[in-house]
Amino acid sequence: MSVEDFDVVVAGGGPAGSTVATLVAMQGHRVLLLEKEVFPRYQIGESLLPATVHGVCRMLGITDELANAGFPVKRGGTFRWGARPEPWTFHFGISAKMAGSTSHAYQVERARFDEILLNNAKRKGVVVREGSPVTDVVEDGERVTGLRYTDADGNEREVSARFVIDASGNKSRLYSKVGGSRNYSEFFRSLALFGYFEGGKRLPAPVSGNILSVAFDSGWFWYIPLSDTLTSVGAVVRREDAEKIQGDREKALNALIAECPLISEYLANATRVTTGKYGELRVRKDYSYQQETYWRPGMILIGDAACFVDPVFSSGVHLATYSALLAARSINSVLAGDLDEKTALNEFEMRYRREYGVFYEFLVSFYQMNVNEESYFWQAKKVTQNQSTDIESFVELIGGVSSGETALTAADRIAARSAEFAAAVDQMASGDGDNMVPMFKSTVVKQAMQEAGQVQMKALLGEDAEPELPLFPGGLVTSPDGMKWLPHHPA
Ligand code: FAD
Image 1 (cartoon, rainbow, N blue to C red):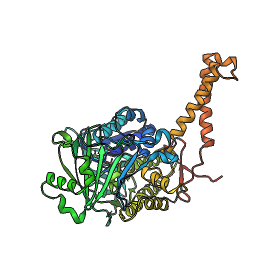
Image 2: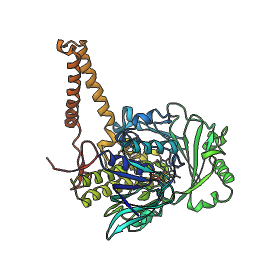
Image 3: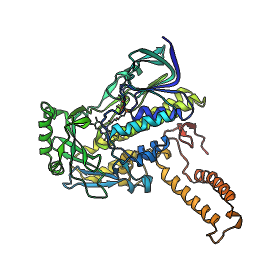
């Protein structure tokens, strides 16, 4: 059997896999992505966070494609949760880190969203093979050196690479090859039963695109608008109540809806979808877990392959794409010869564990139902240890931007400043301004001015931006383009 060689081979083409593959290919490296299914394929996990949409997706170059896809705009969340009997709402835009045009995310049909990411990977130079399940890793002593897979024609094949990424989600067993155990949380062990409805009620504008999360005696419901008429509805029940979702799924879901007055009201005039990809009532275990180690020489786990935390804050795709960004920085730095593997991957693992840990720790307190939302906001500030107010800390945590990473939050500021500067140059060149100089009337000079302006803008933003500090003592910082790590040299 001939063995193909790549710089990086990725197992799985979900958000984690396509993101890491694209960000490494964009640095000129040769990347192969192997996906078991043929896209588009169904997946759960439809509510996104601003950090994914305006941070990682901006770096991937798909911001406009997403904006034009017609996905409902999610400005925040509406919760009937805790001691207060009425629903309460939060807006991402309350935080300066997500102000203006970055104050929203989307509710997405994952078949479409994941396909946008995978097609973008192809456009950016990733070799993508669908219908190609990975069967095992290839090892050479301590190091993982490649993957075995079955191609779309049923042939057994082998590929070698400097780095193997497991982004194959929570159903594959590939992760076990990284070593160590998978530690399940004692606290978060729920089961979800979910389906799709046409004609459900909407929250009033401008929050009609919000996720609605409603606690009830047996657990909680998600209610996610996927279009003007289609809604994703899921009941998450505690392990102790598991018998409530056993047996006939239709009856079980109806009984759970009847237990929850607000969801009953929202679905009063709705009909369940019973055909096509949304016709099935599905059950998923949503036990939270964390792998003991996220990498070994030559192999890295990202996304659900590495860890999963209770879905109440819609953090799954954020953790998948953020871990992909962290892994890509490490790989890009090692392949460029800038850093050794251990230094680069320790930074990846520490940042990834921090983000997972913040969600996990905060979620434990969020399940205390005898307090009101102010107590949750205060708890968020305590967990993130940041300088913002209580409510801002809460919104930043669940917007995915509590790490303070510039790459996840600065898009809006950069765009606004660029537009401001370009407008000023335009005004001078067109002669509208008081201090117009005749020379600026020339188109050539105007273009030169604008180009120089862009360079100047970069310099301006560089000086203006708060200096990024390592997240951990002695740790690394990100490069200005967000694609690699740099050593930190204190001034
Ligand atoms: P996946 O999306 O699972 O992608 C993995 C890919 O790998 C798949 O395409 C699969 O076909 C492929 N694959 C598997 N095995 C192999 C193999 N052997 N070889 C090659 N390819 C393989 N997250 C949110 O952000 N918002 C939500 O609202 C949300 N709600 C959720 C509700 C529930 C009940 C649950 C359980 C999860 C929810 N999540 C949510 C989490 C979200 O589904 C996941 O975190 C997210 O899909 C992880 O992305 P990933 O790329 O790691 O894995």
